[in-house]
Amino acid sequence: MRFYTQQHQFYCGIDHHTRTMYVCIMDNEGKVLTHKNIATTAEDLI
Image (tube, rainbow, N blue to C red):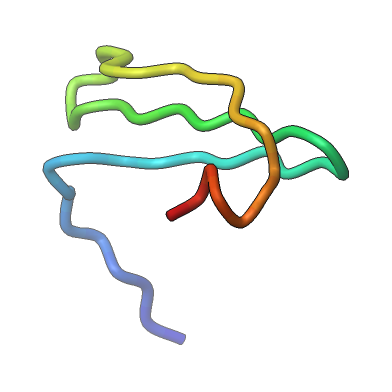
């Protein structure tokens, strides 16, 4: 099995819950660019 080993410019993690989700975006050096708690509604996602 082959794995993708190249680095990306940004990384995004999303922890999705019923009413909220936490979004974290980091650069390729590990610096956190944004870390937000967002309501989980269609209006907020658009």
